[in-house]
Image (tube, rainbow, N blue to C red; front, side, top):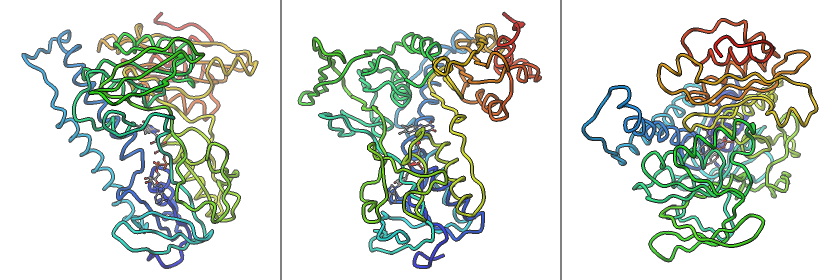
Length: 470
Ligand code: FAD
């Protein structure tokens, strides 16, 4: 389809929500155009989110391991150093390879790709200011808004991406800051704090709430925080930033207890603002066509991802729900299935969440706090990696598996894993939840030895019976 022809589906935004929706729509035989303003596909996730952060987490972990773990495995160096430009280049190579990969998928599936900024002029027409100059109007019977999210700013803290950075700036610092202050103890702050902490920064995390990662199971969170503290990450919880002074060489932050009280000063070379993300709809012309959003700016949609305007849909970070790439992808597929007149389905109770620190923390389903609040009778099965042979063999045995199951039926309600590769381990639990499995179902499933996954099986045994190895 050329831009001027009418499309079955037009997707505004080429992030994990938008590009997946576009490919799926084309696969279903719908004439599809995707509009993206950044000049590269993959959205926040691929360009300045999931992928570059995981590249740096891996590189910095390798350095940290080489420094702290290799000697005890009998691998010694006479010299070890960080080549930050090379580390950044490897990250950039991963990102550009993947963005080009999506362009290839667009070609393969015949998705028309329009590079530019899209703005509604009517519920079926998007005017695009093209990156190469000029303007074009893209028409569609159905239009999907997949414009994602942006960094939430803090009042009085101006991001310059040099001394005061967002996650985007923190992914491409030109040198390792001696002191890094992270504002906000969500997963992005902790991941980026880990990267720079491993490379040598002194990291202090300032958080307004009483806890880090508020969505995490409380017991797991406590252990997780202890782990991060062992890695020399400092936490100032229940603390708010009330002033920022960038006039000197570094940054001076004035902080005070969240409840009010005596102020103190924190010094930093770089400050990372990671206090959350907000839906991005600036300049999209939502008001022109009358699309409703809630107070937080999230576009409200019905069960079919349709907004209050017929034929206009929204998916991903720009609508309510967890702001995660895989959730955006699920939204995209389901939305297109509805457009094509089929059934789509996303089960928001079973979206896994992963914090990619070391160890990683992954979870699916309910936390113990949530189960308690529901008044459900439940059992808890736990198994520590200290008793897992593979974890001991590789000398990386910090963490645990925790399973919550309904007392009567043994049906699994939630699974929480802290382990080096928890983000991979969690998926047998996601599948178990998806199929309404009991903990006994997992326990009676043969798990290969020696693997970390055996800890999941043992925790399942501990839920309704006794584990073998502890
Ligand atoms: P986005 O990825 O934000 O994509 C929206 C796209 O729309 C953008 O490319 C934007 O340029 C484009 N756009 C916006 N307006 C217009 C317009 N008017 N015209 C044309 N184009 C427009 N999630 C995970 O699941 N796992 C992780 O490990 C993870 N790590 C992260 C790390 C960081 C540092 C950050 C910031 C985020 C991370 N996320 C992670 C979150 C993840 O990036 C988002 O949930 C995901 O990108 C949302 O996808 P989306 O398609 O809804 O929006």
